[in-house]
Image (cartoon, rainbow, N blue to C red):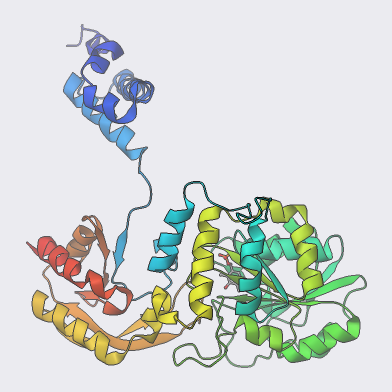
Length: 447
Ligand SMILES: *Cc1c(COP(=O)(O)O)cnc(C)c1O
């Protein structure tokens, strides 16, 4: 062995390629060749470093196959969500309603996105959404862009570029890891002027701050809460200050709640129409949290301000594609037509105790588990600390982490919670039609 050159034992790429029929079929010849080259190069480097490497053609083909498979994860796969987190960011936030999914499929080929079929003339993609947004938000006008971060950048760029925007020190937030208000502000070209303190800011603090103020911005603290000695002005009081200063008040409401009546689980979560009624001139919100639609950023309010945003070049850069317009239209129509239960997020928030109990009991009976009182959460940076009590299923199994792993890697994947040495299934975040699948998946994982 020592007097033989181990590098000579490496098979040639062409020879490997000749045996890689299945890979070539699945991934094409160029990518298969690349993967084989990478694998052989790695083996060569390891041999040169004096490590022991299996240079058998079959082994190398197998590593190349695994390497290429890892580079081809495919599109996102469906997951059954038994975690009890309704707006689960890692699972794509709001699941779409059946009509929203159908609308996306219908729009996915050629569609009348920018064409008036009646006149044959060119239309605008925003025209289909504009009245829906205005009606749903209780606003004079509205547009929708890529996401709430985009809507905020757009409003700052269109309404305050090169000028000052007043923000409370208590609202310089980071949401979801990469949404940092000061950075968003800098990217938009507006200048941040901090007002008040971290725990207390009063309306008067906004009265004479800054010297070239274009806007006052208030941000709903979606994912945190300052407890104890804290104070923030009501939106109405801020609106008065903004009016006295002759500048618009923008409000980032976050979750995209449309209904103004109080909800038992949502406490004081602000709604878009409520914020506008309280005096905000423009409101910004997400499409895929409590609105229950696709990823989008809503911007609704005074028509002159919305028109300036619509005319800004960033509006084009941040615009929605036809698929998301389709899903957003279907979701807004459901809200407006009082068919909220058709929207999965709302079906989950509004699920009755009795309906959840019946489903939990069925799951527990089928899986030899126990029904106990548990907690679901709204999630997704909405309603911080807001929990929803409800019946959940506890499965006392020998190796809960291993069972959860098997469920997660099954087909379809099922996400459960592991806590207190048990596996937990929350029926609230599962569609009732998924219950039977859950039973078979868990039985397979336990087998
Ligand atoms: C979630 C959230 C955002 C970010 O929304 P995206 O649609 O993800 O960009 C911004 N502001 C607030 C208050 C939020 O809750």
